[in-house]
Length: 292
Length: 214
Image (cartoon, rainbow over all chains, first blue to last red; front, top):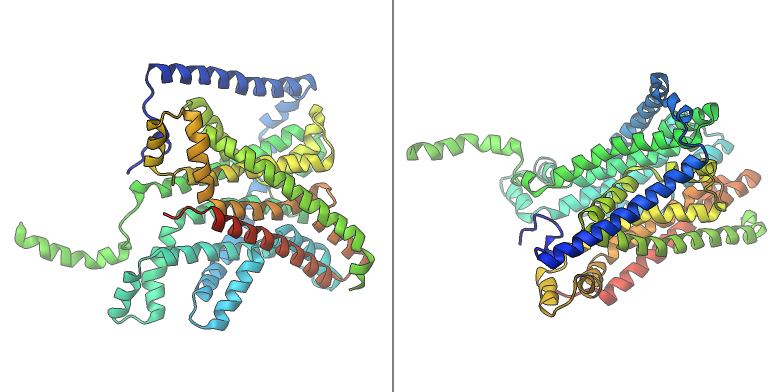
């Protein structure tokens, strides 16, 4: 049951009538989609939003430089959250799978709570709440701490799914080779689990980069905030925010494309990590030699 | 806890706004998401392409950027609606992309035999989508759709950033007066957790009732 074209099983290869219907459907869709696009452009044009002088400023490299510094801030924040979040995520995932009941409850409780509180609420707490108690963090951390609290829980669930998806035989084999439980987890289970959920981790990274746009609220220099500052200077609100949206789209779109490439069945390697196949190398050649 | 009793009316009103936004955007995004999925798996190439572009756009662009674009920028092109409806509209089209992704993964779980049986009975493509593919696809993804709805409920908080006075925004305003951040934000967090819990339990209940035993 291989499905090359994901939806091809929903209909058979069209005959003459089917092809005619598809042509009619295509014509209607082109008219409808083109009509919507045309209506939008007409609306923009009639309010002078398509005038050349409203878009020409964006031919200036200085403006792009200004926005790209913002993208740099976005990526810095995302990198810090990804680093902290993945470490806490692995710890929480292991905690939720722990044999000790108290640890399991604590990890589960944290994950369930952190996943159901809006990040904006945590940011308002950082921004307006904690300073009232005399606790004040630098701007970057006002953004990074709430995002880490939320993302650690999501990373934990992804890692846990990876660990649970691994066949039991892997850890049983490792234990029977005399590895300690923590060695089994570190050397055998985790590396394979994380490889298996790599596409989900990349998708979560995209969602994380989107979340850093909340830096807009804490006035941290990231892409959306820079767009806001820029638009108060040039008064080109539509143009500026469309360009910012486009930058997000191109950057995150490439990451999403990477995630779906990782997911392609063709790229699924054997469940054995490369480091272990390297270890098994000499045995292979030993077996092959007599046959040659 | 005197902030609670003194502002109960305002806080309940704000909670009402949050719930209203979540419910309206939730229903809207479910309907729109299913339509996008149908376009995504339809035999018409340009519809498939348009649906692909739609989901990719909303999955890769931050909600806050879209909210700011819709609330502050689009009025320059004469596109203006009251604040809350704008926020609900943006939430709807944004979450519809996630609904579409979830439902599409459900479509892939529908058995080939089901569709073939439908064809053998003489169902047209539209009928087979309506009676066979979409109902089974939806049943398979109740839990993932529940997670999308929880994310939607959390995302209504972002409307506070563009000026909608909903729960997060009201809690923040109350805190600026009372300066009891721990109590106020914890209470608000508990309310959001309760909303998520209700959606989660609801999804579990629905799943139990509609799940297909294979």
